[in-house]
Length: 465
Image (cartoon, rainbow, N blue to C red; front, top):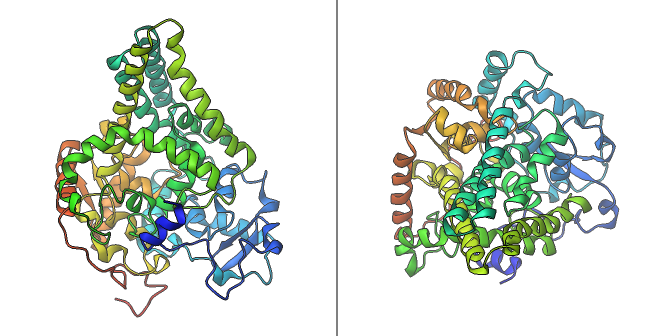
């Protein structure tokens, strides 16, 4: 099934297709020549800002061809900086802004502004020194050292168990180094983040595809039934939302998902290759992908499989194949379980929390009501902050080592405003809740989408209480 057919079958909107009768900025030759983006209802040419953006070009590339408001506002601890920079860029007169799907607006969220102001004042008072991107050095050295050791064992004694050890190392890299670096948060240096981000390709993924899928789709539209790629691409195998169609076999999904998780690595490989040829991750078109970024997909696959196959030079093929199976299965299970639990528990899946148009919602509140935290500092170290999912979604450009301190601020501000903030004490605790949720989604009757968001943005929708 093609991507377009899949979207049609699942009734998914296309945020990068103009409405009938509207000028199409994606296919109009006039606008194709411009690196355009939309920020707060105004179209700009990003071209002059390339090579000048202190955080590197990767974020600008993601912004090309879409409304980048949520991207820019959530990635800058000092929002006035992003706003000031945009005012210096050339405005595109006559651009069909209404043809571009509106993005949420983090800076209009009272909750988000309160939390961010406290984070700036209490944790990073020395502004402009990028200290919020510092602190991950020791974790990087520790994890890469473990990965080198695991690969040494695999190369010396290839087999299922050594493959599993390598899979654990790969998963740890995927959860921490690549994840934080591809968010631009592992180092103040864009070059260092770029190199560390390529560890995604090293473990079998694609840093390019991940940035579009994860940052443009998932982070901006967390748990949105139609806009978050993590929700709808699990279909038809797994049903994570009651608004998605139900099949007879979903009643068994809480059991067979454990057979599907080891195949996650295979799904990554297929998705990356398909995305390379279609320039599409299903959740986001690769409008701004450069030639080098596209090349990393191919180069990364050669390096990844070359490293896995290297022991063939001195060991039996059966042992190497067993090792590869162990690697893929173990890495897939760890990544799937860790990524899935925080957004798939009952309190993070209330349809009224993601109803209506994305831009109408209070973006800051949505990050709290669609995520759940678990554990503390130990979990934070081993998951790269993914156990503190709420804090990560609010501040993707802050290094994960700071999330435990931020969590205290988030909890206090949420309590002041009466906003739900879910946190489990342990991984087993949230995993049990996740398993029960998947079980219940397998039999839940399909429901209609909610037209109005429960947590509407008061500045955009004053009539909605």
